[in-house]
Length: 363
Image (cartoon, rainbow, N blue to C red; front, side):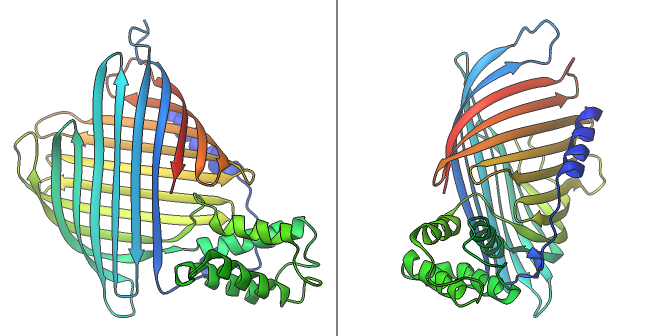
């Protein structure tokens, strides 16, 4: 799978970067709130890891996910959950993972204390660990400014604007979009944004119906979250539930980094390690994702992950995966995804290749 890592590097290098008058990371708001959930039904063709193709199959998978991230000056929390149910030639598999963390910030700093609960399960046998620790850093949701820039680009493309919107107008639009929950009606927010654009001095007269509709569609678009920032955390915890019957103290380390290279491109890196105090067993996970919006309805994404698990008294098991997906938005929230996945696990004779087509909705 060394070639898989090279593919990820090449994907990073070839994605263009556009210069902006202002950086997305210049946008800040007192409270960051990100909520997404999805549901997908997919069919999969599997070219297995064996040379004689003994396990090539077709299967169906129903998968769901939920993410809630909240960050305020003095408090924050995050909830993540994912679950999938697969049926392959009559055999059923249930796999899931969930975590919840709570952060308490020192006044006017990014230093925080945290509590975290992790859970993973296969079938109905979960592993649960509770961790307490400290950390530093924040992830900031800059999606409102990205939407303001996208509105600017759309109106320039349609020749509605005589010049790009000034930076102060872009930031003002972003602030209003960031306060969307405070508006009783979506139409009130659209009217406010239209007013800011018409008062900018780079548009003649009033915006037409097509321009107003385009602004509304950009504001309500889902699946285009842009994050900026980093966080580092370390802690000590206790494995309260383990199918193997081992209840141990554990060490936890995590690092996360997010950077929107442009309005249309998001890079997100994360790594974490959970180990026993003497490092006789551990689980390490690293993920890297790159998302690039090709058009208003098509998105290309790549996700690479690596994990290593060392059981007590056993030998390490490595797993590597690369998923490249092309997503098409049919209408608000609904998408069709075509995904090529490559998996390699310790003991495989050859990488496993999967091609899947899925239809789903993101809320």
